[in-house]
Amino acid sequence: MLFVTIISTLTSLNAQTLITSCNAEFVDIGGEVENYLNDENSEWIICPDTLSEYLEIEFTHVDIETAFDQGLDSTGCHDVLYIYDGLDDSAPLVGSFCGEESGSGDKSFIDGHTLNVGDKFKPTNNTGCFYVRFQSDNAKRLTGWRAEVTCCAPTLSNGVTDGVDLPMPLNGGDFFNLEIDNNCTRNSKLEDFTDFESVGNSCYSGGLTQPNQSFYAFNSNLTGGFVELLAEPIDSVGVIEILVFGPVQLDSASYSGGVINDCVVGETPWSLFFNAGPNQTYILAVATELKGRTAVNTLGSSEGLGGLLPIRLENYGIKKSNDNAVISWSTSRETNNEEFAIFRSMDSKKFDKIGTVKSKSINESGAEYVFSDEEKIAGTIYYYVQQIDKDGSTTNFDILSIYRNSNRNLSSYPNPSNGVFTIDHGNHNENEQNTVKIYNQLGQLKYNNIVSNHTLIDLSNLESGIYTIQSITNGNIQSRQHIISK
Image 1 (cartoon, rainbow, N blue to C red):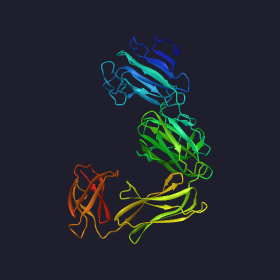
Image 2 (tube, helix red, strand yellow):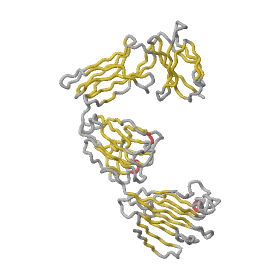
Image 3 (cartoon, helix red, strand yellow):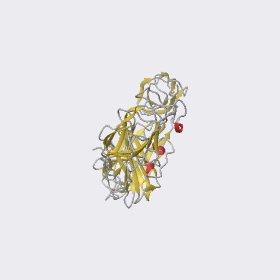
Image 4 (cartoon, one colour):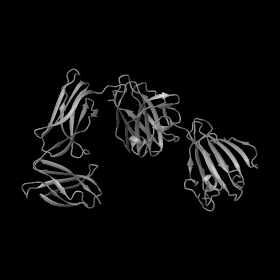
């Protein structure tokens, strides 16, 4: 039901109207029939029926007099509609607008002040209301505006907020499995309730960039340790951003402290992994490109949230011995550990499994392990070890790298090139055959052929970027990077 309270009368030059409805039409003082008045100074407060609903106004008709100079308040408008995010003009100003899209089509003289049909606005304050003021001069009287007032009811799970209300940690240091529904959110951001400040454009420095944002505060357990979270789309939400900010301390009505511990971005982002301190509070932030639901689950290996990692890793490293790559690691505890798998890559993007080592732990004690890669490969080679639990769960160790020499010298020239270049394999036998594979930065194979020692290759159809050349000759593998610049 629409409730409208009018303070003063609509025939005067000063009127205030209160709209408290989620199914109303917001129109100028002349209504749908008359034009607005000269020298008008009218006010509206627009709120939802209840605080549990989120309000939105969408303009369907706009005809407010523009200017061909600075106009009123340097807006480029003769008549101005002011929208404030709150209950009065002390609240933050959302914008000051004019525009004649539903009339002559004129726009504001100043960029950023043109109101268009289809423009939508949501309040971000905890009252859920807008204060709107309209001021006109004594020249033209135009047809004004019409806007639809609608609301949605949020379906965020217990403890999840869109940031307008302060999220409180509810997990008690234990695992959590969340369904975060971004179908109905306000436009609040991480910095609205923490002291986070954006200092760049990346996930680690700029925070969230996708529009539909929700937040969850959680506690680590009393001992702390590694925490791994996995975000997976339930609906088609496009790009998902997930980050953890903390540790934070509750200070009155906001959190202080904290840094971004880890963040991932993608349509199906990989798991987020960080080391939580004991009994600390962190903020999980999830943002989606489109409205919809996303599941965020604690993986079973998260020892900082109620569980224990299947192993406790003590030492982990790589060294070269007789031109072999030797990877070593040791554990001080193993629980339900089945084995370790070793993976290798020539470009740090695409990894292949090259071997396994069975667990040597007795009665869940620790053990020492060594794996030697004896394949003759030259260049910078990348490795990582994956722990495999008895139930098939896995945990990846950090990526290691090592440079391995060869008596052959693979080269490409000119480097950089425009995509046309010569590959020299450094072979003593000019007739020796070499398998050449070339990968882009995403690990995608772009060239695969058997060639002789000195070979001119034309890859001018490829985009500019850094490519990895891999040459295989009689089991000897060499790799190098080549830059294509256009």
